[in-house]
Amino acid sequence: MKRVLATATVSLAMATLMAKPSEAAPKFYFGEGKELEIFFMNQLWGVYTMDRVEGTTKYDNRLDFLLRRSRVGFQGSITEDLTWRVWFAYDNVGINPHTALYNINDSKNPSNGLGLIGGNDKNQQFYLWDAFFTYSLHKNWANITVGYFRPQVGRENITTGFEVTSFEKALTNFYTRRHLTGTGPGRETGINIGGLYNDESKKWGINYNFGVFNVDKFSGGTGGDNLLYTARIALSLGDPEMKKYTIGYKVNYFGKRNGITFVFNYAYQGRGKDTNPYPLASGNWVTLKKLDSSNKPNVQFKNNQLLGFDILANYKDLTFNFEYDELKRTHDDSRLDYKDKVWHVRAGYNFTLPNKTILEPAITYSEWKGDTNSLNGDGKFKVTDVGLNWYIKQNKMKLNLHYVKQSGDKTSAYTTKGTDKAGDYIGVGLQLIF
Image (cartoon, rainbow, N blue to C red; front, side, top):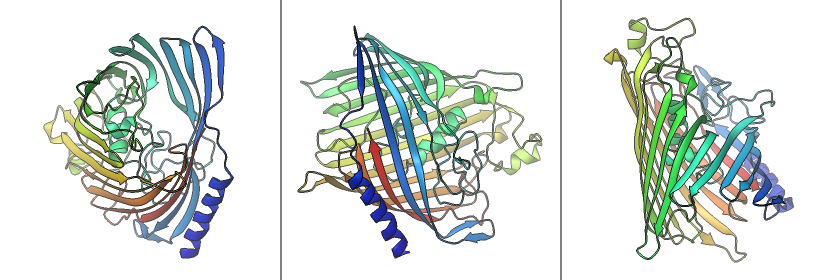
């Protein structure tokens, strides 16, 4: 095992030393506010899985190299007030279905072995990740975004995996996205209006987002209300979380922010059809004989809701982040109602090295608890992530080493039988953005 980890670490370190990403992506200017920028983002991971059990089968410890996240995209402006971004993903290239990663990112192949890992077993998936336009009616108070993007609720959901300080994103990302949109990427077509106000003299600010999205995943049968309504209100004290309105978010500010942000999140969808990508429906579903031939509940829910709050605090070199979400679904038959709970807490501290690079010890704890009738299972799943992040050029060039412990009981989206064990793993990662 030591030899395997040493080999993985040395390989990624050599790749880091050889890589020379530019400070900025190439830009093209066409006059009168028109510009185009090309960008690339990649995460190369080496994951050593330990003690994985699927049903009655115990798998040998194994090392898996994969492209966890890969993006290529374009962004720019059409006028001074109209900006846009279109980018594509080719994730999980080279992943082994028995690797201990718990992500459920792939909507096309939601059940690929224990853990419901986003597959890409043929390494051929290349798909749209975001496509949206933002028009500033007022550069602070009124910004309208339309297109295909993430509903603006839940900090982990709307923060890119290239910004978090844990090795993988927390459970508040994956369960929240499935609950809101029925897909792993968590994107939908819709419209969002948001604004930002900062009072620099009194050291406070407010950021708001209200959106309406078209959730086709939950349409079916007699149709129903497939509109998802979202609301997010953030209050910042001290330095602001952002100085210019955006729907992209940070975690580590590398000592440039002394402030705290408190956020309220809410989402509501009316009547729609239940979808069950996991074979985890509880006894009540079976007893009521509501399952069709494809093992999906053939009933409609009355409403689907998310209620949550999150905190981001940055003080000099210290980073702290917390999020709690309740995922609630109500049915005509109250015996099918459920409310899942998912949360995480995260902390890290930056140490500036003599060569001006930054070393950050970081820890993240994440937990999901399923209700008795939850379509995600009626168990508990817990993840503890402890590691080091070495920021060579902040998030544009990062090398990290983490140990991740995973455990649970009964069933969840990552353990489908009582005998399953997702397994622990050691992860080495190289991140390049240019």
